[in-house]
Image (cartoon, rainbow, N blue to C red):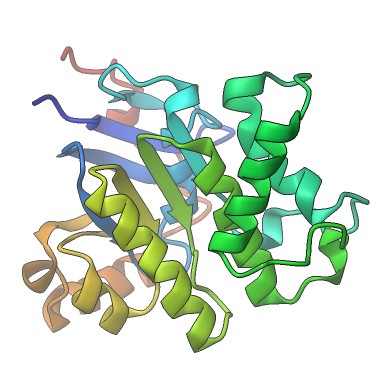
Length: 252
């Protein structure tokens, strides 16, 4: 079976200044993968490249035949404009764009799907509340409800358990495991190494450049984590784009 994701010497960045260097590897269909690394390691940048928000400066990312409709992306909650006057129901309903189109109506059947998604994440009775009134944990539950409706084959979660209570984390982790059991491919950027060790069989350790990629127990060693921290601390944000990054992408 072909990989859902193939990275070929990928470099990603902004204004031709790299944030992720020379990443190569494959993510198999149905894999459950944690992406870890210090702050500033390039995790969110990599996810933006996967979902098509950011074009590689060099190299390539292959989706193995998937297109944008096959990908569900859960951004960090800080990236959501909580001041926008939209209800929880309407926000979650945007997850149906894949099937209804951007301007498609929400009939009774689709309304029932939205309500079922809200119930699945424990937000019964929150339909008409505006998103700005939600707590951090409620916000994450709402974002997960939207992902549920997208029914995607590839799910990309950026810090899904950050700054939320233990009960919410446990509830949402059950959804992640459910998606994995359904053979969906799930990638999650995470900071809690104990959570990663207990629940994610495969891990990518990133520090602007790949440090290690493979079985979680072999990746999350004290030596590897120390190397990653030192690499991020030593990174020069003012450095020019390295010469290798100007090379054309390698052929598949």
